[in-house]
Length: 234
Length: 142
Image 1 (cartoon, chains in turn brown, green):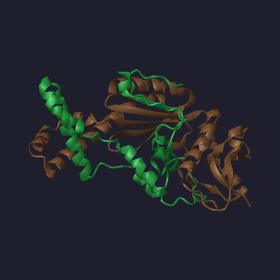
Image 2: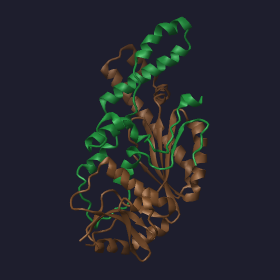
Image 3: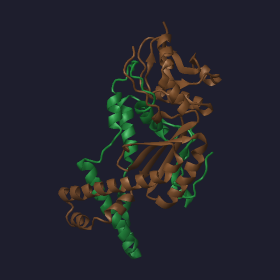
Image 4: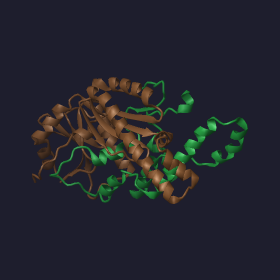
């Protein structure tokens, strides 16, 4: 019996040759198709190569039409499991919802000069640290800087998302990673709405940079907007 | 598709171009199918937690304090006379620049799951050889 690694779900269609050569194929059922490759016994490891390969497959298929990308690491133990999955009404609903959508990931990062801006409001603490640079004074100042940075981050995130909200179908924010990270947002947009987001972002950069930098990745498949959580059916 | 931003503060990548771009979305997002088994992902849950570097360590606070102190001095320097600046110059050059914590975090994660390994592919995360991402530096555009 075959085992399959699941990349995502799409509509039945021709798989590009480059992907076919990597063993990627579709299993169809009633207008829905699972994007899979056959697996030998044994585990799939979360290596750099495997992660990037997964992203590459779903992103390439998404360039032409809808793909619901699977979270990394799903293995289906038989054809029956694949067909069962495709039969779920939620799958059809998601395919319809994302027929013409894509995801843009937006990250905001500060450069170090943000600390000077935040620190400008912290005069007594800063003077105390300068006069006597002890660990205690340093922690007191550093904590205040951390708080100031958190406020600044919340303000900037709200400002950016308020500005972009009219252009997007949905937004999902997540905790930013890193001391100088400002925000992380996944934006669900119409495929033909990407340019409008770019234009608005340039206007925002003109106002907010420096110290804020933006990184915009996409159009990607709607990774962040395909929640399909159900009780076990097996 | 790619356009220059006059300010140069936007990095634009049409597709995810490295592990840094995909790690979080592949492990934390995407279709979740509770009915099916997800195998061989030992350590992954921990890893996604580690992605969120929090600013709550003494070390970070002290670094912030020092940075505020230093950046502030630099502003003072701007208004000083030229001879003063020359005297002060050596110290500032000796100071090391704080590195972005995100990159540091990603390196730690890569080590953890045995990715990357050597220093040879350190750059891949932001700019793979075949990547279409373009990072525009400030200095180049001013």
